[in-house]
Image (cartoon, rainbow, N blue to C red; front, side, top):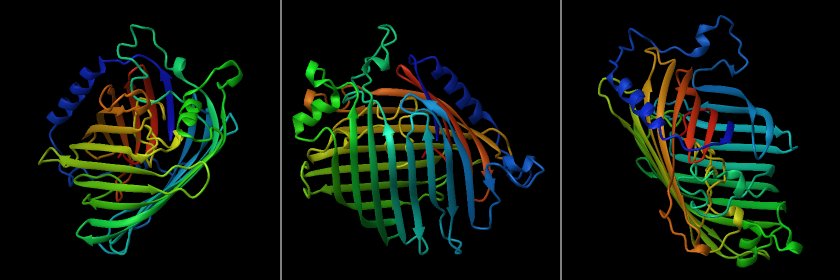
Amino acid sequence: MINFLKNNCFHSQIFGLLFFVTFNSIAQESVNPELCPPRTILEIFKKKDSAYVVKPTKNNFFLVIPAIGSQPATGFFFGGVAQYTFKGKQESDKYSIANLGITYTAKKQWLVNVKNNILLRNNRIFLSGDYRLYIFSQPNYGLGTTNIPHHSRKNNFSIDSIAQPMDYDYFKFHQTVSFEVYNNFYVGGGINLDWYTSIKDKDLDIGNQKYTYHYTYSQKHGFSDLEYFLNGISLNLVYDSRDNQVNSTHGWFANINYRFNPVLFNNQDYSNVLYAEYRHFIPVSSKDKRYILALWTYGQFVTRGKVPYLNLPAIGWDQRSRSGEGYTQGLFRGNGLIYLSTEFRFPITCDQMFSGTVFTNFVTASNDDNNISLFRSVQPAVGVGLRILIDKKTRTNLIVDYAWGNNSKGFYLNAGESF
């Protein structure tokens, strides 16, 4: 993923552009696919080989894209993302996705990500996993969504003024296995391991009584500020009626995951964490299924006990790191967090090579230590996106998004839809 972020004011004028593009797209007449067959961006080149993809086979598609960019937490970075999309031989089998990303940064950081959302045995078994190995650094910005004040442009507020840099190593292993018990309904469980080590709080100066968000929270709740390990098991409930998890045109997806974290080692506290997610894809035109209203919302809450600071729910730390476009990862963190994103997706060319989206998202987070509840402050963002078709059978797109948040903005390049 390429993600460029720069501090800036929230541009409310973009709303007019979004509505103009939206209604202009709805007004277009649909095109008969038989008269205008789908065509990928690769088909305009004569050469069969490509720097980005490997030739697709019947029921699978392998994609490689470079990752090059810069952001405050990493500086300049480069690497690559490989994604494998595949399905079984039966007509009713749905596509599965597995991807690997490896990135190296100018700050000598390594980021290794492995993700899977796999359907097996004619969609009767659903696997979902998130593995990470990071030699990493990322600023902390405090808890809750009141850390960025409204009307911050008038007050010359800068996000950098609340950033507290931190280095740490992170190992994550989250894997669930769910079994279909009824049509599209799955029940299962999972293993969840999170290990943060070699934590270095760069702004911490205890001798001069200069404390940080991370240190203050850790001291108050009895965690080490140098290393912690969180282990747990989870109960998983899933409903999935989407036609294609790569690029859905209809259906909905829901997931409820309840995690139990027992005390097995020193410097741990028993805790429970609830994660609930909902996605819905609604065709808005009877003539052309490419006009879609897409909704994505999720909430994550510490329902019992305490978890270490970096394990608290935070924006941009979902499985695919797609939430919170317009804001830097980890900018909003809290004891509870709720996120909502809406997208209107529409065709640009009749051959499906190019399509677009306009979107909004909202996030709110709580801070129990300061009695800041959910919805006391809601941070919005808006954006526009371009989609470039690279495989017809799986409907895989390269996506380019630009988003504006409150005193923040971001540019994103990925494979596959945002959700």
